[in-house]
Image (tube, rainbow, N blue to C red; front, side, top):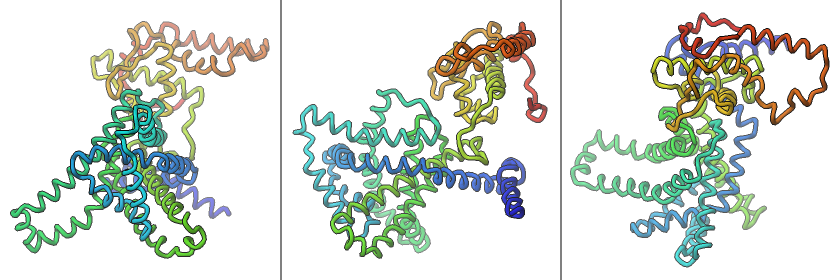
Length: 451
């Protein structure tokens, strides 16, 4: 028992105790990738990813026909409607022989959906059903990226309509351009060369993986209501795309060897297999998003599961540190920090920092610009912001909504002790302003002492 516990502690120290910045670049990247893998597996075990994937399956069943009908009705005008069935068949290929039947059913539903005769109410319901899936996807990705604020309705609507109407046009345009380029005589002459021909064959085999990786990376860049780095989105897209293609091969093998399920479930076997494949597809998409998030935000790499929590002492320290880091460039005329840059410089997860930033913003001590992402600025002259006021804001946060001092039975002895604490704090911070802190030279990270 002791030897097993010692081994576990040794592994935890090796995984979480060392820094990714020490040692060689290769070892740092390997350690970071290992941490991301552990964190993603842990999130999967906690159940939130599977729960949201199941929610997306339900929404998909309700909105897949309106979604495709709305998107592909635009494609009829571009003469590429005949490409709908092959593309849908490719997505459902893991269903094996049943994929043709499911594809045919869906295409028949789409053809029976005549957008022109629906009327205003019917068209509005069609748009709502199609947009609801996009909204669910955004909510799920915002959850993974710890984004509490949703986009404005107008921005969400414009993005969703762009994705539903313009997206298919761009996809089929890219396919058409590829076919046109490969049919040019000069290109065919180059491909006739032995070496280039072999390269073309290899690229042809990799094309499905590259296309899916690009699609996943685009979703990670476009959908979350936060700025996602291109490298993080590409890494998440690579993991998700390769996993999706591999899962498709494994699922097709499973379907081919599962003849007993058709005997048990009869006609429902097709629907059940379809739902399982849609569930796996959404789960893989969310797994890739989780990989992208942890790669971009290594400050969320904790040995213990759950959201980071702040003690009262850490809230006070974080509030003073954040306000100082915001006021210093303001006084020096330098660019203002964002929540993301401030989170990285302080080494604190943006979700935990956001609770302190929200409290300071509500009490009028700082303000956010209209830029994307918003920058952080002092709400007034730093010389007019007392440090005691900053500390007092975070100490009183939540008292209006939760239990406050007035709702607790008074005890004279306890009140005297707390009065001494308040008096000592006011005396220690008397006359000290935020500008005083901003004008001090920033201490190197190694010189900081814990409190």
